[in-house]
Length: 136
Picture 1 (cartoon, rainbow, N blue to C red):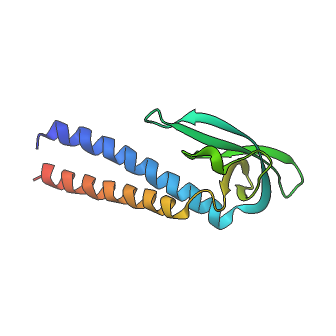
Picture 2 (picture 1 turned 90 degrees about the vertical axis):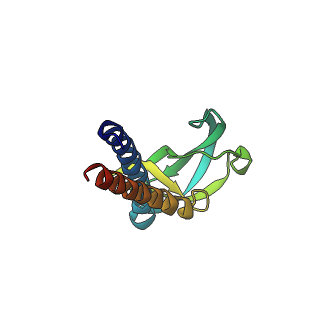
């Protein structure tokens, strides 16, 4: 494989791997160390994903442990907004130092977050293989 092509491929897949691992780590950190409270759906914002397909992102109002009312969104939306209705209550976890970062229990999938992490590790393995072949 041409060295330049290998470098470009490794750079792109390493960037994707780091993004996936960071996303997985951020979610797991909220699951493990986030402050748990009840939040209420204020409204659902419609957006599009990377492919242009519609996705729905709930805006959640909640009170921090200090009693401050906040509104925040999870990092990802869902393709079917019928699960989310204004007024619904959800158990959430928020980061105490940055309450704008939330994880919604039973909405955000822990399995998906693990899969994102595994995808990131797989990409790093592909990078190592490509580099090994290139340096021979």
